[in-house]
Image (cartoon, rainbow, N blue to C red):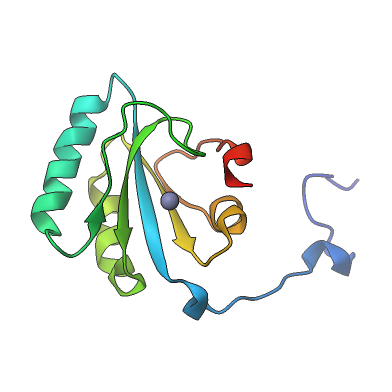
Length: 132
Ligand code: ZN
């Protein structure tokens, strides 16, 4: 009996994929998620990031409310594709209980957020209406 949640290997239409070259990635965003209970940890994490990557990434505002498609409070880091390994490696090892949503920026916001998301910690449901 087939599991309807799994792709059927005998049906090639379940595996239609188009491959995109990473050269379309202009840069990356990392959005650090938090709420009132994790606010202080998020602020301390931000200070560590600022100290380590001072001038090497763009730090966004500390939003104490959900903004755009983000369902939690958040702040944004914008960084170059070439920094991905070092920065994301550090985030992965040091995020503690904070969740981090990463997405590339290719000029297609819906695809970038919906189909190309990378999560550190837990994933969250985005508000898709904000991406259209
Ligand atoms: Zn973003």
